[in-house]
Each structure stands twice: as C-alpha cells, then as structure tokens.
Length: 200
Image (cartoon, rainbow, N blue to C red; front, side, top):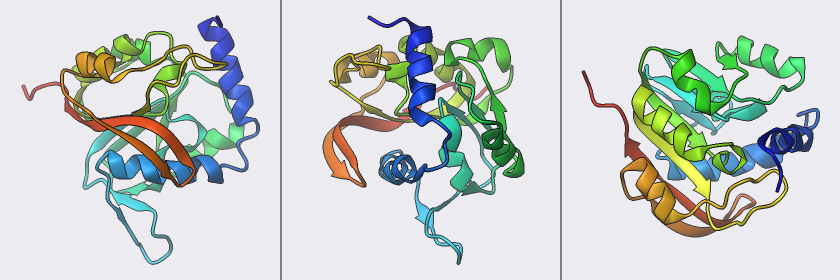
C-alpha cells in the first residue's frame, strides 16, 4: 500500500513534462458533458465553456484544468498538491487563473469566502482523505460538479476504490452511474451536480 506522498509523486511523474496533454484533455470533454458544462464554438475552437460570471474552484485540476477552456469567470482557482513545470503556472497566469499548490484537505485553511461552483473530476482516488475533501467542498461551494471513476480498485497512484454508495453518502445526494467509452475515457463512472453550502 502506497503512502499519500508516494502516490502523489507517482502522479506527478505520470504527467512528466506536461507537454503532450491531448489525451487527458480529450477525456475532459467527456467529463465536462456529464458535469453539466455545455461547450460553445467561439470561432476558433468548439471546446469553450461560458461560466457567466461565476467563481469556480477546481480541486485537483492538475496541469491542464478545464478552467483553461473557460471564459467569462469572475474568479477561477485551481488547487493541486503536485509541483509541475514552471511553464504550467505561467500558462495559468496568462489565463488569469490562480493556482495553489496544496491538498484539497486543506481548503478550509486557505479560503474564507464561498465559490459559486466547486469542480472535482478524476482526482479523488489520488487523495489522502476524499471524504474530507468533499466535506470541505460542501462548506465553501454553492454547488459541486463532480465526475469520478468508481470500482477501479487500488493501484499505483490510486489510494482509494471509490464507490457509488460512498460518494452518495459523502455528497448528500444521488449521482448517476454509467459505463462509458468516449474520447478514450473508458470505465464505470459516477457523476452529477450536488448542492453545497446554502445561501446565507
């Protein structure tokens, strides 16, 4: 059984220099659809998402967050514990996206305000305490958009075997389960839009 530090190092090494990201970004289009994000063509690319002035926190977005395909956001933040090549952070800066290098388990220590949306996709199996991350997300986000692979077992870099029952309990709702084979995203997945913090 790997420790969290070992799993995180494995994940960072898996991404390598982050130069050829097409495979991961192609899969993200399948995730985004199931997270309720609707793409539009801006005349240059069909892979754009209008956030209509929302503030969004992407937990575990890694070196190529879906936020890089978004426009019209009020505040956009990516948090990820891995350290990637410096050019990754310059790319985020150029897109006006903040990037924090820390764990999702530490969100409440880092953020006081509330985000309109929290995004979690294809990352919880790598974390130390996925239930705590979801608890934190529910406290600082009005809604949570989530896509995760389930029943994958434990393997290198993957510390947790996520299940439908566990995710439903942590999220306080019922997600949808589907076996997909789309955009090289293959497997049994769980997804949905869940309520987080209630309006004050």
